[in-house]
Length: 530
Image 1 (cartoon, rainbow, N blue to C red):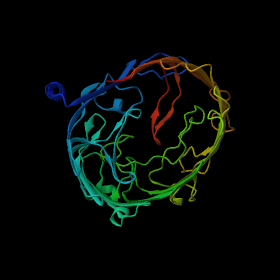
Image 2 (cartoon, one colour):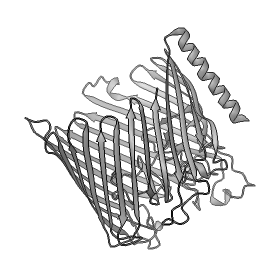
Image 3 (tube, helix red, strand yellow):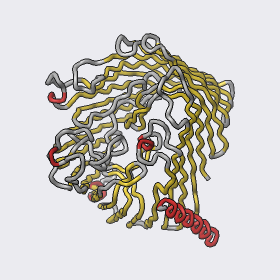
Image 4 (tube, rainbow, N blue to C red):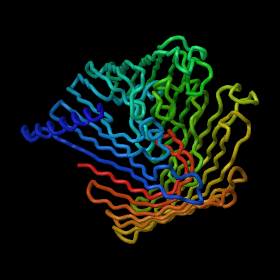
């Protein structure tokens, strides 16, 4: 009944705003719709992989209205039920149609206020980030209020308070926060330098239920309050930029499976230097019990108050992304370095070389995290790629990646090694027609052994694209994972239809991952805006 009332109110708001636009002629309405629907087919090659309900569908309708300094919007969501493998579908109500988010805001030159679902981030997200990622089925926005004020160009302050969204409901906790940003460069009128200092505070309040099955008191939690603090800076001068942040938190459980509450800390540092066609960057991060849940009574990827992505290269190639790294929030030290260099012809803009090398590594923070009482390697990736645009028609990419990873996530000493080779070629027949082909090989004496993969994609710009791919495990399961389909784009609408078999594993977006079980099915996705 509550959902029906909310949806009725949302529809009335949309109609009222539309009417207001017609009356004044100054307002503007924008909307977008997205659906991702799968019919799951029985597959004898993947026993037990088909859900009881052979159908899954995630749907999002977003409507926004702006009139001068006023903005308002809603997002309706429908899960009929949620797609297989999404944590949304593991809740009590996997079939749900509800008002997922709503807001009304006012903003002028100095002051802003928003009531509804708050999306924001403090610093680099070490203590707080609320955002939506539909690929992961994640939305941890705060239902409440936020406000900010800019004191000239020098100082800005913002605060927020609300209860966090947890899948298709709201957690029993309440979150409040305050963020202060000071522009040192503007205070001293430094034209050639940018220097910002930022300080943040976040508090999570959640009553600890002594009658609950899970006894948090025995794990060392004796207060409903969690306090987190962070300080950061952002410096830029000519081609150099430097970021840094330090964060601390009071005693907390960093994961749903933690057996003892502990204080947490984190350090983040990033340096980027650019000179002409050369770019060099390095990132370092230390995490010590820094995982922060929205609610102590929840679990899963969506039950996260802060943002701790993996410091690794994000691949699009199938075999390079076969076993992505997931952050060890209980304790890790990790770093990543990138070097980019470009050589371009002075006489022909269609001829150039792009060189890229990347190195990423992560270790456990404490020897106590392993049964060997030694720090263990969690992840190591040494990779490089060379992109060559030969002429107006032909482009090639060669990539190599050596990945070493711990199957026990650092609790034991053993690691697996994979060597991945990728060849990618694109040929344009004319301005509209092009053919792209990928050939990939994974060489490994560990885990499932060698893999081979390939992809063909033919495009008729700007509307049609047809693709087919296959990924085959040569030495282990001897299974192949095939996909084929097409996409059609017209204006702001894109529809894609595909059928295939998908391997069980982790799907990542922005360095955050969720586990997806194996399945075979027919998938249709549609995105449009108007």
